Amino acid sequence: MVGRGCSRLAMAGLVRVDLRIVGGRAGAGRVASAACATAEDTSRGTIGSRHAHPDAGAAVKIQEADAKSLLAAQGLPVPPWAVARTPAEARAAAERFLADGAGRVVIKAQVLVGGRGKAGGVKLAGSPAEAEEVAGRILGMEIKGIPVRKVLVGPAAVIVKEFYLGAILDRASRRIVLMASAEGGVEIEEVAKATPEAIHRVEAHPLLGLLDWQARASSPSPWAWPGRTCATS
Image 1 (cartoon, rainbow, N blue to C red):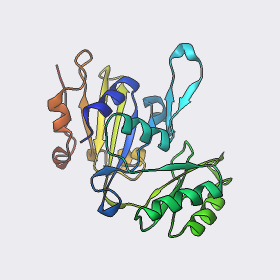
Image 2 (tube, rainbow, N blue to C red):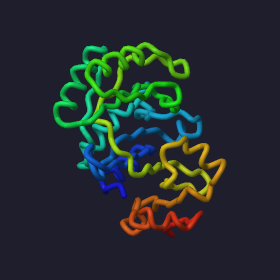
Image 3 (cartoon, rainbow, N blue to C red):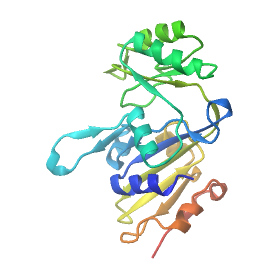
Image 4 (cartoon, helix red, strand yellow):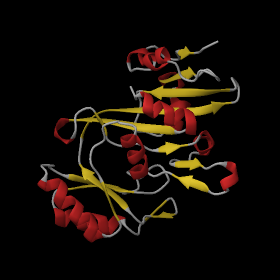
């Protein structure tokens, strides 16, 4: 399960985090990717946005590379990555990762919408030249109307399991609710519609926050009991 540091991020910023757990040579047991969003953005289907303080006016957008930085700052193990804004920068990053032993690299469009893979914004490359060519195709393309101006480059990982973890403001219970699902890798809104029992919900105490036993109860094991909810009085 996610460590206490990431829980603090979730509780403080009401962020949602999609986690991809990877194994194999590229980084066993590491968090390969993460995307953050607020509860409001979740209801709109927008991935990767977090609002600033009301006095600040403008919203602060959190892309995958930024989310990785936040997770790493909290002590979570994350595979190495680089951000490239040109095909040449993507080639240079690929050269470094391949020289370090990666079999292939992944190149991912950095846009604040879901469905990047389906739109052709996530590709693998086996050589620096191929990475440059792939980055050239992704940079400048539009995904759901948003132009891609930068890409994330990193070692390709062997995906063991994908999870979903989110913290939302539930108006019915008037509490922050942690949602977890073993059905990661897909849009959580679709999971909620098709198989709502696959989402595990934990209500955080308004004063005490998320308690340790609740975090332990949100480990993969309890997800075998569909619809289970943990709450504090």
